[in-house]
Amino acid sequence: MKQAACALTIAGTDPSGGAGIQADLKTFQELQSYGMSVITSIVAQNTTGVKSVHHLPIEMLKDQLEAISSDMPVHAFKTGMISNVSMMKAVAEWVPQVSAPYVMDPVMVAQSGDPLIEEESRVWLRENLLPLTSLVTPNIPEAEDILGESMESSEDMKEAAQQMVTRFGAGAALVKGGHMKGEAVDFLYDGSEIHTFTSERIDTKNTHGTGCTYSAAITAYLSQGLPLVEAVKQAKYFVTEAIRHSFNLGNGSGPTNHFATREEVFNKWF
Ligand SMILES: Nc1ncnc2c1ncn2[C@@H]1O[C@H](COP(=O)(O)OP(=O)(O)O)[C@@H](O)[C@H]1O
Ligand SMILES: Cc1ncc(COP(=O)(O)O)c(N)n1
Image (tube, rainbow, N blue to C red):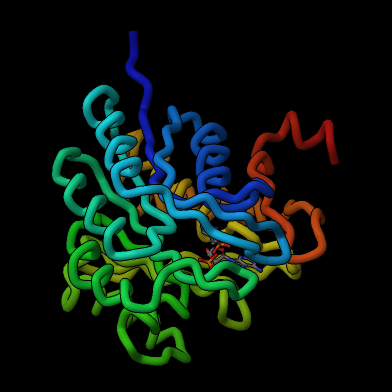
């Protein structure tokens, strides 16, 4: 029998289902990878913002990671919200146990503007976790934070992607233009050249979980053995459709639609 492609997410939760672990598992399922999840923090949040955060004890995080690597195959994995240095250390110590592509979404603030990582852990993330990645996927504020420089143009974004790889040791870097005006353009530096991924900008406030969904889609495609550039290309299509058909749910920034690319279901509901 053919073995399933197995994808893992290590991230925080979103009870409203649009971001974090919930978005990642929906995406893995939608793209037909077997989905697994390790929870870092339980976040009481919805489309309007974050109410409170509970970090799991470090031993619990380590036990979950061990439960995966001692028993389950991992063909690709991603990290999302890892709030503090102790948690980052636990993940960094675990990474060498799995030989699979590592996609890091360097989550720092929620779409609502609420902080999701502690201020002092940003340097640790850059210096110790970034060099372990196969791909890092910052949005513009995250790239500015990691590099300590402000970014205004496409040229700045390309330069940032290169710096993440050449200066800070990421395997590759995808700098996302969701926060720029005009078309939604992302730049990938894969260690040798810049690749550009463009879509039209969709006029919507419902972008809760776009970054989570995008990095989870890339992880799913990598778990299936797609080369990096192809994985990003297909994931960009997936996230664009998820935004185009996003749900107008909640009072804030609504969630994306993880089944938007499933034509038969889509025609039934919309
Ligand atoms: N309004 C939009 N229309 C189309 N694509 C968008 C829109 N907003 C974000 N994107 C795309 O969604 C993906 C996630 O980007 P971004 O929103 O910058 O990430 P994050 O959720 O981490 O802030 C990127 O491919 C970006 O270009
Ligand atoms: C647990 C968790 N992780 C990440 C995000 C960021 O979401 P976005 O993809 O909108 O940047 C979030 N709101 N909650």
